[in-house]
Length: 120
Image 1 (spheres, rainbow, N blue to C red):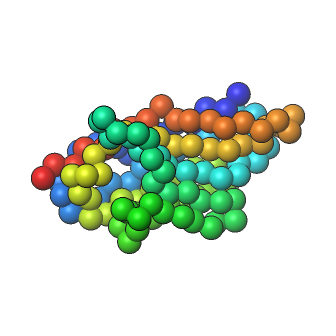
Image 2 (cartoon, rainbow, N blue to C red):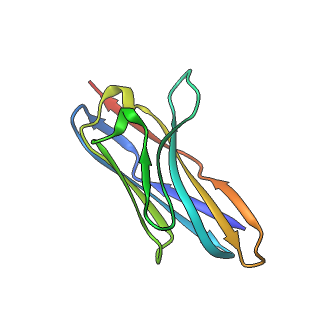
């Protein structure tokens, strides 16, 4: 009913940058909150950044000042610009979306994950 396609992961060097994208498709009436989570090996999944439908943002303390989340409502896409990358940012990054379907049902959807590896 709702599909998320992520892109932009890959390998970066310490201090480098990557930009993740996540596009939603399906029988969507509206997309509310959009977020990025990450899960490093052996660790729990954690919230990296979130953005409301109105553009309010929140960030994990570990990424404040380095990462920027944004969204394009017309394209149903959320972005995560990651600058000044550190080896500790290595993880699988997941897109998370709260959507309202055409039949007014609410649905939380997760992307398939995209791997970000930062080399020291």
